[in-house]
Length: 196
Image (cartoon, rainbow, N blue to C red; front, side):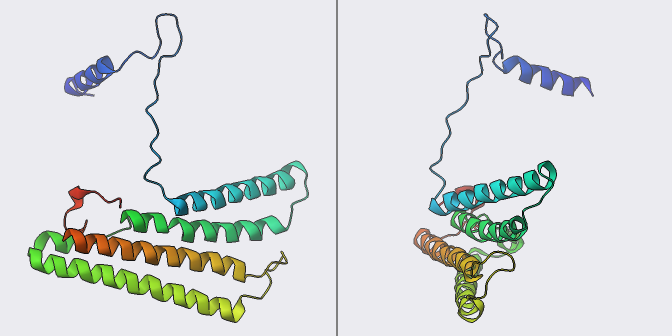
């Protein structure tokens, strides 16, 4: 480590408040937690995640502690993970934080960027709406079939997937309306923030 790096680290450590108070107690203050950026679909996905965690823990416990694995836990955990993914994907659509290719936004003129941004919004809405419709069609065809181990129709899982796609579609429409009202997209001005 160079002396410059050491000096920077020592200055940073000197500016930090002491961890122990004068009476030897920890004097660390946590910053307040702001949950306002989360929406109901985030909490719904988190609920499925906790059920998934409990299911996997139960599977681990029965397999290694009781030496008799519960057969249903693997299938249920797999379907719960699918539910977490599709419900959880609505949050990044709302925050417009999915992966973007923004190279063209740096090299093209502003009017072309605006048209391209509108096109991205329309294609996203069309894709997510079509995926919602396809999932509905899938439910109609095979939704009554039971799962392999658990006697629950597989349509329940597909209904959650369809709900996730529908939430993503609604969030994409709201995001597009916001972009059209503001006159620019986050892709055009990334410094403006992502959360709607």
